[in-house]
Length: 248
View 1: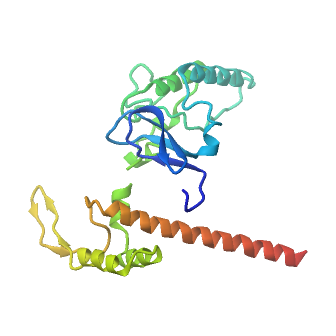
View 2: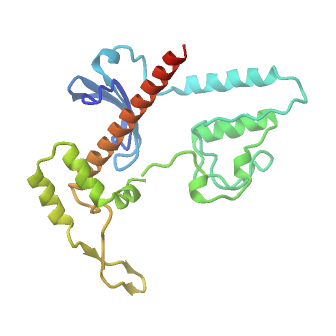
View 3: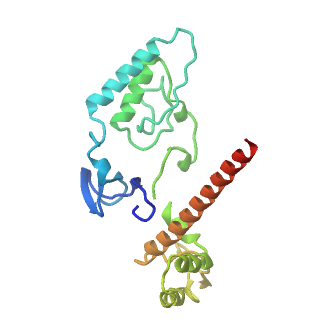
């Protein structure tokens, strides 16, 4: 954040339980929320000058109930007979199955119902509406608006030549680049499954899964990619501004 001059950063996979704040050094403070210390969790990192402007983190139950009450009022103001579609992410799981709620939802929800999901169902009953995305069976990855944890696949897709380039571009000493290259040279693996094990084959792309060094190498690659994307965007903006000036 210091290097990129980023003042506010949203993060995921914080893996800290509870709703708290903590200083993380260099004048930055992290506000985070999580229910499991093993996976998931979200947060926001703020530069120190913005920390004092934070009023609260998260919503109390009373505030959520007030939201639904105000939404009820909006719905009641719409003339009878109008067709209404509400598109939003209410952060709720209505759950699999629809026993007792057949009139407002199908059976293809996600996992167990949470409090927010119950509020969605109750609202649908009050307004004679339906939770339409539960009526159709879909692939697992299409049943939620966000799913954390897609880094394993990203690790597997990092081109080795791109890795060497990014390390050098980031100023990593050549002797350390060579050390990492030696770690990856002639790497081989096998795939084990229920019916046996494959023959060994070469692995010529991706980072080593489970290596303590891999997150650092992945961060280097992402850092360079984001920098190049930023420079391209900056150049694009400059060209547009120059073109606009010439036209004037």
